[in-house]
Length: 79
Image (cartoon, rainbow, N blue to C red):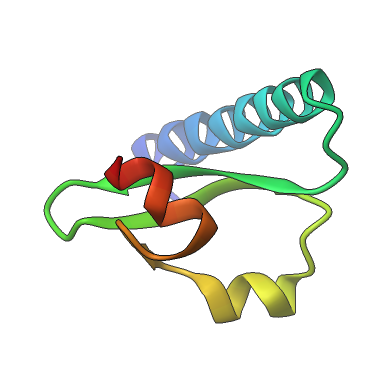
């Protein structure tokens, strides 16, 4: 593996840990036991999960990506 690849991989691991920490704090603030944080892909208009807590992998596979305007996640983004 190249040094550049390892640098990018390290950055991705750090980002994943940071997102996990953010999701834990946000959900704790609201008293939520389950939830997801999403990012919006502006080119496609789809929401993709960035971090989750208490969501079964099998459920995540069925609900991603989420169109803006659809469901409990997409509707608030549209508004």
